[in-house]
View 1 (spheres, rainbow, N blue to C red):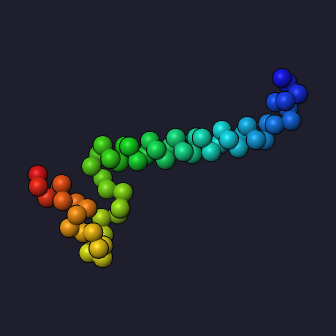
View 2: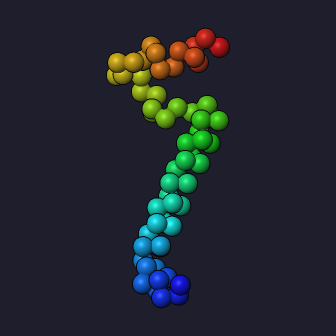
View 3: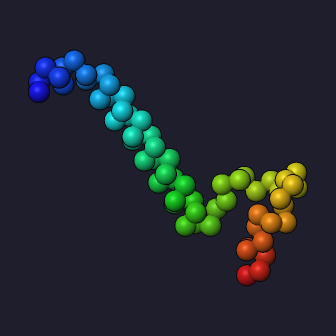
Length: 60
């Protein structure tokens, strides 16, 4: 087991680093969603879907 860990420690480190980055990105998206922030940047003047994207906010 120790030999396997010693020969694969770089792979384990890279996978752990990628997992942490994905976790932080997902946490940020969830936090923004709960705060009511949009992930699109809200520059709707140039968007083809401007009337559809934020229609829920206009109804409130």
